[in-house]
Length: 470
Image (cartoon, rainbow, N blue to C red; front, side):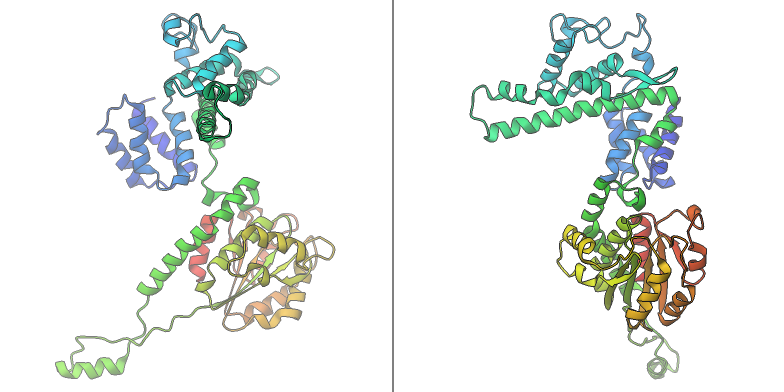
């Protein structure tokens, strides 16, 4: 594969992984390659990173894809057993490894753990760690993946060497009888932990590279790289993803608020003040050299949020509510109502300064949103109109959050129509992919015919919608 092919494939893989890379940025990266020594791999990585990576959160995915498209070596360098291309450890002299009589391919587990312990102490170069990781993957990483099939795995390597169990031994060597619990131990523990992670990452990188060479880079790239946080689907987010999303609420709200403020300041200048313009034109012979506008009266909408709080979409509803309340200054007033099969106002749980985790915990425990535990949009809409219908008026934007799945219960379409007619604007955000709408018990088209429904699967789509709404 030529360098040009690798460049084109790498840029395409970044886009497939959700990293925003424009054609112009791809050309900038290609120009940068002409300014560096291409034999220096880390220079190549730095050139691509400086031209293609925009946010720190994008860097881990970038590094994984870079290691796949520009590996440190290929299987041919140590996959073939010949004289020209020996495997790591084959033909390795003891002087090269720095340990008398040490060969990774034949050494026993205790000797390998001793070698790994030396690497974890941070006394040797990073390249030695990478070389040792490749040799260990070669020796332990090949495992059965089903009848007649084999593949590469990280787990057998880490299980055989158990790097995490070396901590106590290494600390004893570093401290050499000094008092435990002090600064020296803390520094040593941090260094050993960082080197352990470095070794585990090197093993994972080599496993991915080997699978890519056997199955194709494109195939492994799709599964190896998680999308950036702003493109993680709410419904498929892990617990760690949700924790990171909650931490991102207020930084995202600040960015959105700044953009909205700029848009309001640079937006429509107001209607033409005809009287002032004509009066001023008298001094120039009736020619309106200068025009005057009436002062702008920006409209800040009142917002009413009606959200499905059932388990299937709870993560989406919680994050949207947190973001909405973080942006409360962009609205004249914000009220929130949650439902499963009945409705309760939940505005009180999102007071200014409230802790994110505490708000969500209180919401789950104290809000009266459940009768029988099965989502019922029709009943919830009717109860909302009956108890809280006065919350929706001519200055109100009505925002409904949910997947429109009502367990085959009556949909109460007329009630929703009356609420929509009473509001200034109405919108429905659905966290499901559009291709899943109207499958099973979904009433997406029926509800979407009354209230405009938008696919909102991730933070990027939600942020774009909030900008339009405010």
